[in-house]
Length: 117
Image 1 (tube, rainbow, N blue to C red):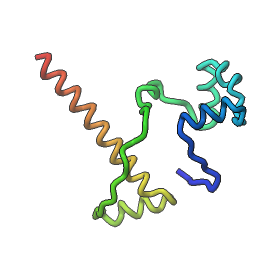
Image 2: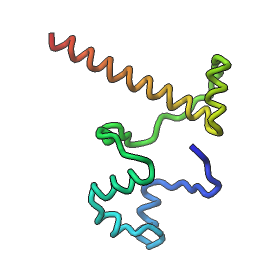
Image 3: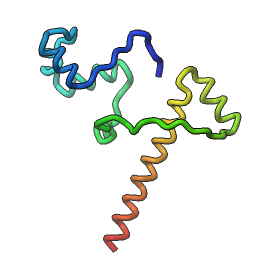
Image 4: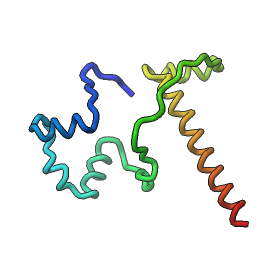
């Protein structure tokens, strides 16, 4: 993820108020009129095709607050993340989060199977 100097952060409520005041540069009527097919076509052009189950991976809300820690990593692992540019700590966190979420899904399926027996 590259950071931009022009990033502005707003809450959903702040955005609703800006839109109501006409301060948005987005053509919301056009956005709301778009079909799902059109949205996916545009996304495919920008980022490549969306996986079929992309909606199941959407998380509503903010992730938990970050905590400062000290962690020892193998040098080659750290160098690999750093070699991919700024944001290496964010990428490490994303890999760890993906691992945890996968394990949670596996654990839930295992629990459901055990309770069905």
